[in-house]
Image 1 (cartoon, helix red, strand yellow):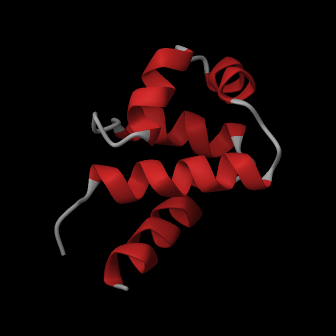
Image 2: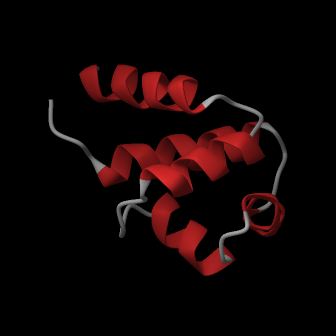
Image 3: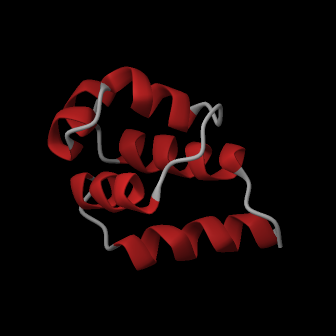
Length: 76
């Protein structure tokens, strides 16, 4: 199954919204610029593993859980 930036961004945005967090809060917690997070959420760029790690921690998840959710969404 190929990697899909769109799916990853959609999942991150959905998880962030479910937790009631703004892009500003998640970008601050993950130490990445808000504009970079916005590009990830829109699927315009592919995040590095380091960036995914920081975003998942800001969302209160393990990186492996975030990847599992993306994989499950990609399979459906």
